[in-house]
Amino acid sequence: PQGLKLIELATGVTKEEVIANTEAALDVSAV
Image (tube, rainbow, N blue to C red):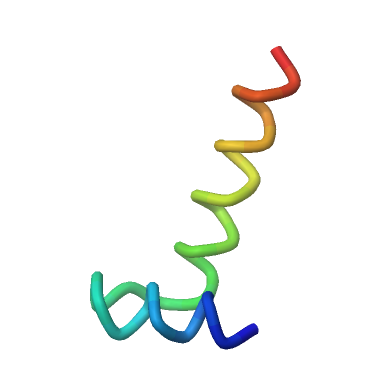
């Protein structure tokens, strides 16, 4: 959770965007 907060503050994105980016990264890793 803290890591996500740091990412939000650093990039200025919303939680939904962070989650979307995480899901995309997981999908790429899965492939």
